[in-house]
Image 1 (cartoon, rainbow, N blue to C red):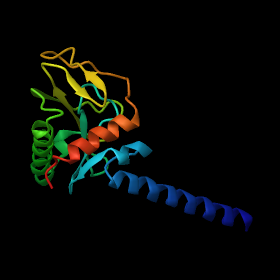
Image 2 (tube, rainbow, N blue to C red):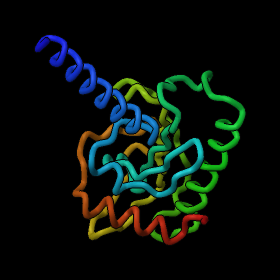
Image 3 (cartoon, rainbow, N blue to C red):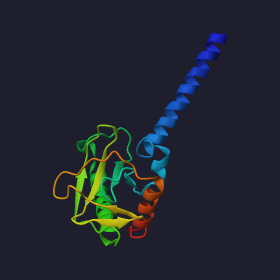
Image 4 (cartoon, rainbow, N blue to C red):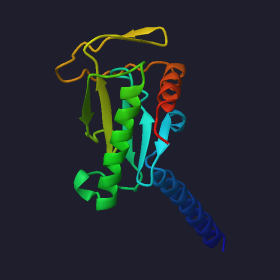
Length: 170
């Protein structure tokens, strides 16, 4: 009898854990607590967030909301159309904001660490920018961007988010 109760408890626990994992995936990807704070806009199929790693000033991530999507070829027509809209609105928010105004955009889709389809949007700058008391220099402008492992403080990330929200389309 005790074995049956223990088995039922274990099954219920596993189901609760599965439900929690599913809800995290339904939000787009497994979240670190700070990722939620970095969000710029939620679409039906995508989440746009400021990256916690700023390879250049204003780096963002566009992540698929549908669970278990890892490849561009797995996207349906609605997701592809909305991806274009999400990218256009992000580019516009960066371009019209006087603190950013990148000269170009680079896009990376790798999926090596996070196995949920996402795109790194990397603004590129021919000249340096000043933001949050930091001089931001795109040292490899015109070439492949340097993949920075450095993370500015969360306060800087939130300042980037707030600045972009001021010019982000509704």
